Image (cartoon, rainbow, N blue to C red):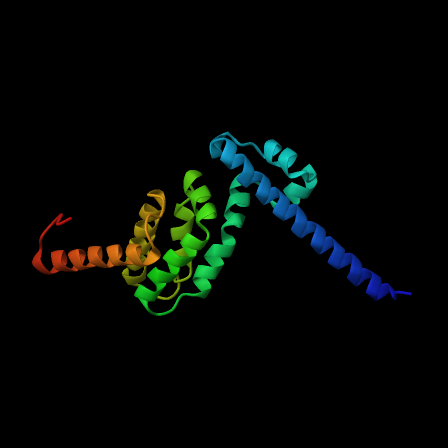
Length: 184
């Protein structure tokens, strides 16, 4: 026979498992709907119906479809942030590799017009580190290169994309040194 504390623990574990299942069903419903129609045309009611989760169950976790979508991409963002180092070039490669790994989620965010959230989260990691524009400048370059690559359908390999960025950075450096403009 269970003690009262063991019973409470079992109920907490069951509740957590049910919550996790509701979150997964809600996220999957949104992704499925995004394959059928434009993100802007999807309502919370449609997401709830598709998910099979009660209205209260969905709203217990999310206030809006934007929150659902951003939660979907939190895992790749967390993975990318966890992999960051002091090397800008390593960070660029990490960003591209993880972005490729989570291509479906990345595309969903771009299609929804929420790609700015990636840059916002990249900059947040360093918001108290520096008073210069060094980090935001690098983050902006990595972000823009990655987003343009993703919009183009992530053609080629990650290595080819990184080489393309490195070639572009050489042009930028040369332009800064010589004062030339629009070399591309």
